[in-house]
Length: 435
Image (cartoon, rainbow, N blue to C red; front, side, top):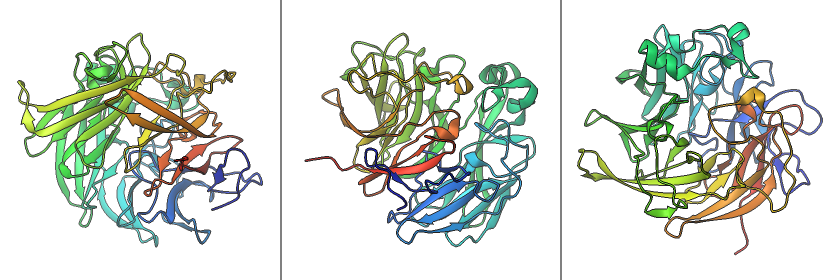
């Protein structure tokens, strides 16, 4: 699986340790990067001068390029300084890990490829729209491509952008509200490329979409970087059968978990939502308004409705220790265990000061997390058991250097990105813990 690193059991999955000058990263956390049998890993790498999707066979040590991009990076969410309507949409790549098909946007084309590199154009992105992270349904039959009116990122990154990623200086969500911009949930047939349906979501900037794993007619979507009411507006659901849009998280007291007395408020910061395998629960994390970081769980009963006619929901939220103030992401395996690339602090450790001004988002936490941890939640007991596995030591400078750890399907390993040196690489570490 590559050359072994001696520190904390890290194993280098991509590239070598001889100073290679290319970046390699996992696909985005809303999908897996691994084949169902955990033998192949799908990566985005610029080893041939342009970002492309590659398949790495971890047992045979072989690599295969699956896309044919020669035009750099497409402009989209996160990749603000990309080229409009040209290049690979690094934020568009998603994997159907059962059938091992990759979906992505090349220029204005919505494409599919497989582990052999057979490329098929499915459809085209309509003129005047900006795309973001796509998602394929668990049954492999539908692809959701979120789009927003192109005006949302109508700016010159060189003169009107700032930071490493050259994000716009203006408040994006405020432009959405002021100019009445819309987003669109565009769902395509993965065989024919036919547009199955398009749902307009007004006054919204959608960048993350995830089909319910048990019902592809239910789509969870976000509202990115809300200018107000992030604690409520961030996580949303569209139920196609009922043509119903609604927020997932509600204001109210937390009766489950251990929120240390903090109620759910619209002023909270919430992000990185994901489904559990049964399609009945959403996991998210964030921070309470003027309070600590937290991780939350929402159980949704789609068979029962509340007084507003919406599915009944029950919440558990666990507040983290005050010193756990390092930004991170929580991801889940198929058994309910979490992994995290931030928040955790080793007792008594000296915090490394990092310059993160090039990647400041709306979150309230520092980008100086250094550990990959396994996190075992006891939701009813309101406790998290943190098991540090290794240091990732990424510099966090830019989206690609965010570790975004994911479990193998068997749950025995965790894969993550890191820019420890000059380039982003992919590493893995054992997730097995002593019994």
